[in-house]
Length: 225
Ligand SMILES: Cc1cc2nc3c(=O)[nH]c(=O)nc-3n(C[C@H](O)[C@H](O)[C@H](O)COP(=O)(O)OP(=O)(O)OC[C@H]3O[C@@H](n4cnc5c(N)ncnc54)[C@H](O)[C@@H]3O)c2cc1C
Image 1: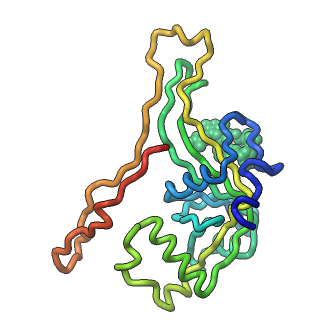
Image 2 (image 1 turned 180 degrees about the vertical axis):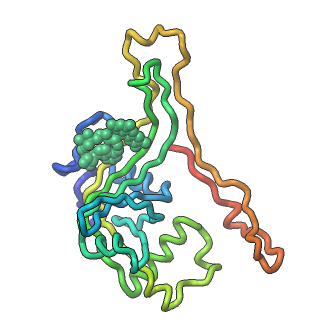
Image 3 (image 1 turned 135 degrees about the vertical axis):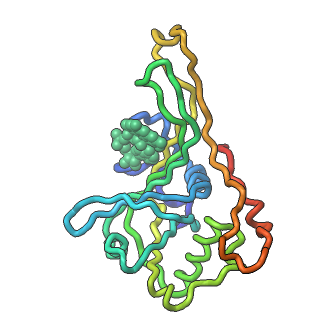
């Protein structure tokens, strides 16, 4: 299936946004740009007793799938590798919304939720997935850093989750106060929240005064569109 043939975000029975449905976005490209702007996904998995866990992972989008990796020794990752149903979310926090009432106070955000089961990547697909994840999180690094050796590859489980079934929710408006609250004599508005990189810090064991690579000094976090 091509991206255009996949179900629209929020169009299946279990992904229709019901609460605050006006915040739903059905444009797959908008969801992909949220995924491309994020670094951390939260992935659900249950252990043998049924206890649910939500595991944060670094990830990358590759076409119509999300890629992430973990240890082959992790029982939680093995559950995902064995085909356990999962839910993956990515949330970008854009601001704090201060209404006149605490009830209407909220946050500005862009979020994606993906439902499905993971597949385990092997061979060339596994190698290229590790490059894609590295280049998403650390653009420019794959060309310079040592690549995983056989032992490291054996210890690494690489998983792909298809973006077939997903939903998108975006909150980007000002406070939405009750009419009765608007005249209250307090400030109301939005405080934007932005992520940024700080100044690079040398590793203490750097063997020579290597300069910070240009590809690192070029890293920027995008503002919300
Ligand atoms: C930063 C942030 C803070 C939030 N804080 C709160 C809070 O304090 N209290 C609160 O009640 N809610 C909060 N939300 C919203 C929350 O994520 C849910 O959307 C909301 O609770 C409704 O859940 P529901 O299961 O009743 O929604 P329903 O509309 O019944 O969910 C139906 C379907 O909509 C989709 N969906 C629901 N939520 C999201 C989402 N966030 N992103 C993408 N798809 C979604 C899923 O596919 C889900 O299966 C917050 C969201 C974000 C991103």
